[in-house]
Structure formats: C-alpha cells, structure tokens
Amino acid sequence: RNTPQDVLVNIEFEFDGAAAAESDDLPQAVDYAALSECITTLVKDSHFFLLEKLASEILKLVMADDRVQSASVMVQKPAAIPAAESVSVTASESRR
Image (cartoon, rainbow, N blue to C red; front, side):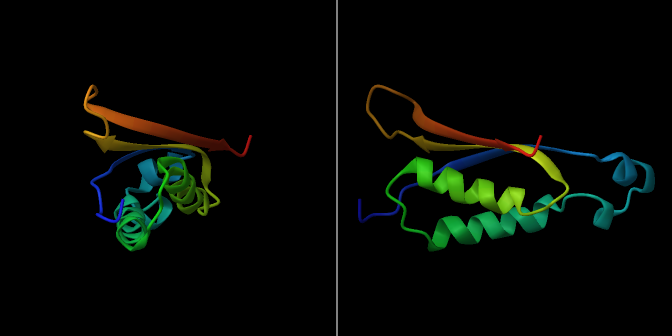
C-alpha cells in the first residue's frame, strides 16, 4: 500500500444551468476544468487507504460550489482484486 495506485473518478452533479445555457458564459456555469484540476491535485497529494475516504473528500470539493444542488462521486480502482475488472465506491450528497 505504499505504492500509489491508479484510480478513476466519475462525477455527476446537478445545478441550475439555465443561465449558463442561455448566455454560453463560463462564469455562469460550474467550471469543471478547474474542478478537475483541484481533484487531480487532491488525488496526487493524498495518501488515503480507503476509496471511501477519497470519494468523500472529492465530494466535499464538488459541493463547495453553492450552486451544486446534488452530486455523486464514484472512485474506481482498476484491477484491485484478481476476479474483477475493478472495485468502486460511490459517495452522494444533496442539499434538498
């Protein structure tokens, strides 16, 4: 476990994107390129043993944007066990 392992991260989030869709203006939207950079830094700089902890920390980053109403983060570890293609954990949160 001292060797870094590959993980894949999938994120789904809901927010009211009507203003962004109307204006085609990035500041009106959730900047997922910037979010991706934050997540990449977190993953590279972290030393979590559990996928659950990593998913939870990524979820906090996503939910830090008050416009995000709900989010789901799936963290997947390819080839974690011999009999499976991958193992994944999903963390979700909603403001509703």
